[in-house]
Length: 310
Image (cartoon, rainbow, N blue to C red; front, top):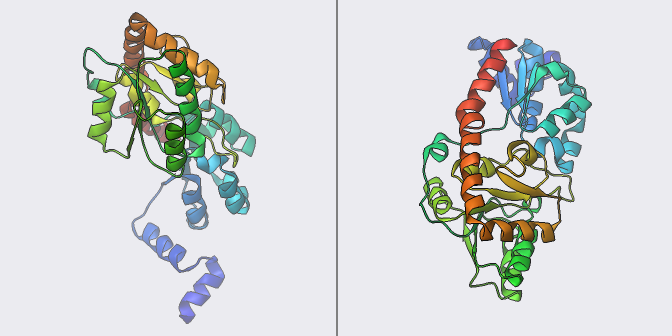
């Protein structure tokens, strides 16, 4: 205990940090890749003490969520100058990291990418319906998606809506569905495994998501479900939010509306439902776009090349 206190006094590390320090030193680690900003905050003192280069992979909440930023503000200020490299999952995030003071030459833009089985799978020939996949949380704004669908139904929409995911807004969504007599038109499936999500993407025709900046500042990075849906030949109707506008080609693989504009979202949902030829053409364009640029293979290759270049 006395020896530890002496070391703590010299190095400024707590017990967990000191154990990590010893492990890195023993294994002769020469690079640390920290997934998420708070992870980097937890180990930056060890990296600094051992002078090991630190790459931080930011994802979204770790750059925008106000409570997370407030909690880590002082450590982020110490962390930023020693970041050897950073990965941003949207172009908007890259600009924000530059504003933090991270050298633009140290930042690479690379969305996480979809798994190859989405990009290589083929849907059924005849598909109908809207599909949403994601947590029922404020930044996904599932209630505004339901509002847009409700508007579309009032204007004669024939497709039904399937929503996959769970979260704190589940009950609010169920209440909205009941209050607006949408029980026969909306299926809330909760969380599903990978294969079940694939099955629903084969069955449904159009992917919908109404992402917004939530009250606590939280934003998306680049939602992987939007990449997966496009890989599965699905045109997308979503918002001009964060990384979504980087990976949906406006008017080619989908349509994007302003955040909170449920009327415009309803119009594009109706338009795609009514124009099957446009659906098919956009779906094919979307599949090729993802296969050529945004799979997990592309993401890992970009990261490996980036690490090599550093």
